[in-house]
Image: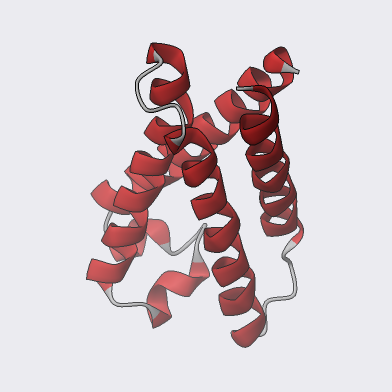
Length: 120
């Protein structure tokens, strides 16, 4: 199960590190083709979500890896569950019914919470 945590947490961390870095560094125009919701969200909020994603990705990997405050890993994964619940709500409110990726990330984060609390 430890291997399962590292595989799932690693994939989530890579995904959120990439997405978070894009939100922090790219302009609204460059984000729009892959994230239509940025038009309805203030740019500082988009940047804040990006920072949260980068910090969460770090929280999934570094604490268990170093053994320093490993309880932060399930907290980070829980944060991703909450983030995806909010993302699904935003997508549905904007009339976007394509939430399969969000549901997949929600499920992956929930399993990561379980793995982190059970096996780490």
